[in-house]
Each structure stands twice: as C-alpha cells, then as structure tokens.
Length: 247
Image 1 (cartoon, rainbow, N blue to C red):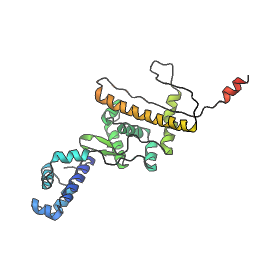
Image 2: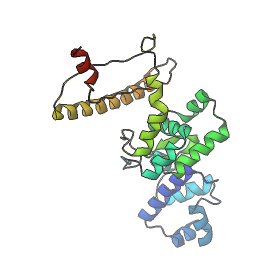
Image 3: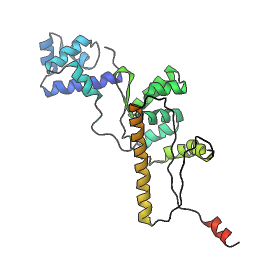
C-alpha cells in the first residue's frame, strides 16, 4: 500500500481505534504472528497491503469500510481564519488561491482543471502545496476536502491586497449595460448601528450565495459557469453633490 495523504487519514483512524481497544504493538505482533518492527512499519503505512489493513482493523472489530467513512468525515473543528503565512502563500499565486477558493466552495478540482486547461502535473503540485499549507485534506480517489470553514472572512492584508490588484479591476471595467450584467445598487442613510446591521446583511448574503451554489451543484443538470459576486458598501462622498447644489 503506497502512502498518500488520503491513506494517512485512514491510518490515523486505524491507530486511534487500536489504541482505544488497548492493542499495543507487542500484542498486535503476537496476534498476527509478525515481528514488532514489522507491525510498526505497517502502522506507518509501509508494506501495508489491503489484507494486512483488514487484519489490523479486525483486531478492534472495525471494517475497512468503517475506516474509510470515518477518515473522510469532516474534521471536528474547522479553522475560522487563515494564518498570516497561509494568506501570504495564497496571495502570491492567484491560480493557487482560486483553486483553494473553489475547493472551499465545495467544487470538484478535476472540473476546475478541465475548465482552465491546467496540466495534470501543475494541478498535482498545487494540491500538494495546499495540503502542505494545512488548507486541505486529500482523500482516497483523488478528492480534496477543505480544513477551513467555508464561511471564512478574509481579515488579513495579503488576500485583501490580492483582491485589490486582481479582482476589483474586473468589476470596475464591467459593462453594466451588458445583457449578462447582474447588479443592484442603492443609496441609504444609516446610523452607526444601522451600518453594522448592513454589514451583517452583506455577510448573510454571501452565505446565502454559497448555499445556492451547493444546492445548484446537487440539483441542476444544466451546464454551470463561474460567476464573481461583489457585495460592497462604503460611506458616500457628497462633495460633488454639494458643489453641484451651489451652482
């Protein structure tokens, strides 16, 4: 059995079950008629065949299917914020950050590779980097799972700067009269409390859009395309209006 990130998760579950059932390396060696060094190698994923894996799982009355299901379960605690180092690494590579955001949204990285014509070696290198940055887990079958809360708020400077340099331009250059343009705008007067509620509404809208994407991915049989959505608010500069009012 060649060790992979997905198999590492499976081995971690197996070792946890064995410890919980009181199986020491010595007891396992005696039960399976193998040497202690051999058992240690198996538990580290070296020389571990499917048959040996099933035998180890059987010691604690767990099936191989149970191990797989448990290893693929979401981590109990997802990080709500990236570290500065993680954000810096993402901000320095726009393709890497787009891949991570796609996985964060629950999208299939294989589809993204096809949409952007990303070579297999390049995609594998990016997935490996996200794994090393502790941003994703890699599961059997080539799948990837985020280790970050999908509703993360980007609070640190690196990713906000990347948006400033890369994404904002696309919205500023957008043709709002185009048939495919979807937008809404309004001007309102609010107290500080009202402005805080407005910020919460914008965040809630972002989560609703994420839920829409999840439902659409599961239910729709129509082709899907990528969309960028910007919800923004800022204090209105009234200087020009004041000048116009005074002729």
